[in-house]
Image 1 (cartoon, one colour):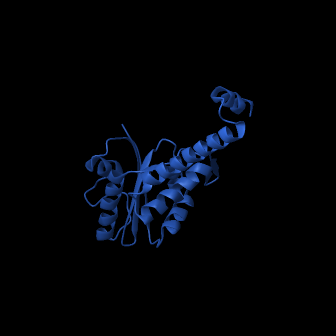
Image 2 (cartoon, helix red, strand yellow):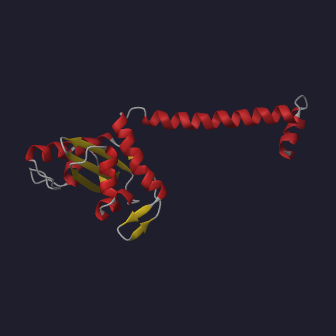
Image 3 (tube, one colour):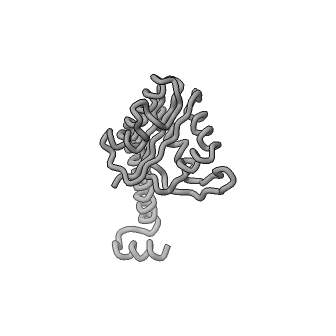
Length: 177
């Protein structure tokens, strides 16, 4: 309050109360602007993509148990359309083969598929699943599977993309060089 009154003294025409109201208003507008900017980042995502990103990032923000190991909170992921494209290629391929596997019908692995769509990765990971009808169901299944959970909680990953074709899900993680 002393700082507010000092600033008020500097402007001489304002009273402490009016200046405090102005400073609070500016602060609230700034906070509201930050929230708007966050929503602007996500506005290009469809409802399913937003839900998947939120579900995964909720675990990353709070930490969780992967098997018997408590994983600490890690930075949130951003959605990447190239990783989504690689996930879609793999989900389509698994659906066509009717086989859940990390190896594509052409012999490719996740890193090769990610690179083929133009994502220049320094690290990558992949989760796959079959038969889960909703975003919540598939993320819950991945969290309850230790290796999949570890991928979700890996601090080295910065971005992700997920796709579903038929009953097959693919989740690609990466960090660009």
